[in-house]
Amino acid sequence: MVTRILLLGIFVTGLTAQFVKPVGDALDGKAYLGGALLSLVGYVLYDQLKELTSSVRAPARTQVNSSQLGSFVSEAFEARRVEIGFLGYTVETLYHTLTHRLEDLFDRPGPTRRVVIRVLVPDFAQPMTVPSRVGERDVPVDDPDIRKRMEQRCREYDGVLSELAERLSAAGRVHAECEYRLYTGIPRDKICIFNRQQVLHGLYDLSARIRLHHLGDEYYDPKGYRTELNVWSREGMAEAAVATWTKHFDDLWTLAKLPHWRQAPSA
Image (cartoon, rainbow, N blue to C red):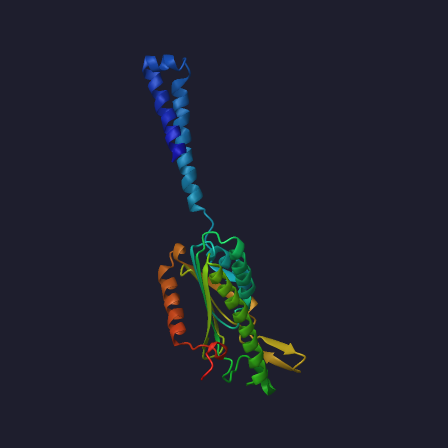
C-alpha cells in the first residue's frame, strides 16, 4: 500500500510540474512528464506483480507423512491456548515432539498459557485382531502378550506427558493437562487435531507385520510412522471438514473410558 501511494504521488507531482510553472520551477526543470509517465508505468506494473504473486502462492499442504507431524505440533504451540487431540494406536509419532515442546515451556513459554492434550488409544485389555499374532494361513490370533506390550507403551507415554503437565501447572506460568482414554476396536483411523484449526486423518496399514524374535512369532502391527495423512485446515477453506472431524473426535472422547491405570483404586 505504501509503495502504491508513493508511486502515485510521484506521478501526480510530475504531471503537475509539467503544467504549473511555480511547481516546475521549484523542481528545477526536470523532465516532469517523462518521469510522471514512468512513475505511472511503475505503479501499474507493481499492481500487476502483486496480483501475480498472490495467484501463484504455494498451496497449502493437502497430504503429509506421519514423520512430518513435528512441524504441526510446533505451529500449534505458538498459540496462547494449545489443544491437541489424537486418536490412533499408541501416539508414538507425536510423543517425542510433545515431550520436547512441553519441556521447552519451562524456560520459554512464549505466548502459551494453557495446554490440553487428549489421547484416544485402543482398549488393549480386550481381545483384538490387530495387533495380533499371525496364525496359520495368515489368520489373526489374539495374543494377550502383544496387547500387554502395547498397553505398557501407552501407559509409559501417558506417565511422562502427564508428569510434565503437572510440573508445568505447579510452576504457575502455564496450565497444562494430559489425559488418556480408551476406545473399543482395532486401530484403523489415525486422527490428529491441532487447536481445532487443522485436522489430519489417515488409515493405518492393517496388513503390516513385525517379527518379534524374543517372542518367537510374527505379528500384525500397524506402522504409524508410515501412515499418510490428509490435511484439512480452516484457513484452507475446509471449515466444514474441520468441524465434522472435530465433532467426531469429541463424540468418541465422550463415549471412551478411562484406562485402568488412571482409575482410582476401589475402597
